[in-house]
Image (cartoon, rainbow, N blue to C red; front, side, top):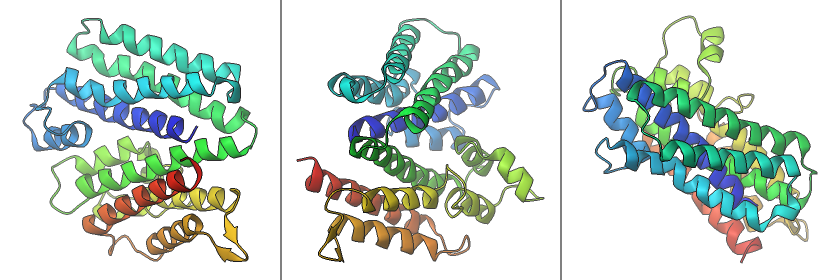
Length: 274
C-alpha cells in the first residue's frame, strides 16, 4: 500500500506536467523554449521533448500502481479497485491512439479526473487501518518531494518567464494565490503558498505535517517514551521547514528537503516493510 500511494501520486504529478507541457505546445510555444525545457527535465530528463518518452513518466508509475493494487486487492474497496482499473484501461487506450497535438491536454485531463477520484476514495472511504496509514504516507511523501523539485526549478529567481504561474498550475493553487495576493506571482508568494502553507493540501509543509502525524500512530513509533528513528526524522524535517520563511527558502534548501524526504521513505521501508 505504501508503494501504491507513491506510484499513484507520481503518476498524477507527471500527468499535470504532461498536460501543462502540451497545452503550451498547442498554444504555439516552441519545444526549445526555456520553460518547456524545464518542464520536460522535471518529467523525463534527456527526453529531448519526445512526447512518447515523456508520457512514460506517468504511464510507468500507473502500471506499477496497478500491479501493487492487484497484490492488495483484499485491502482496497471495490470502488477504489475499479477506479484504478478504469484509469489504467483509459491510459492504455490513449497510448495506442494517434491523438492530435491540440487534443492531448484534454485527454490527459480525463486521466487526471479519474486519478483524483481514486485519491478521494482513499481519503473518504478507506478504514483508518495501519494499511491506510502507509498508503497515505506514500502519497504524502511523494507529493512533498515532487513539489520541492518543482519549486526549486520554477519558483527561483531567474526562472523562465511563466515559470511561477506554471508552479501554481501544477500545484492546483492559482485561485488560492489570486485570493491571497493582489499582485502577480513572485518567488516568495509561490513559496509561501506551495511550500509553507499548512492549510494547503498541495504544500510541502502540509504533507510533512500529515506524514508526522501518520508515523506517530504506527506500531513502534516510540521506544520507551523516546521517539523512534522514523518519527524523529519526520519531526526534524517538519521543524526544519516550519521555521523557514519564503525569503530564506532557497532552491538548495528545497532540494535538501527533497533528499530528506527520500531518506524518511527509505527509513520507513527498512523499519516496516522489509
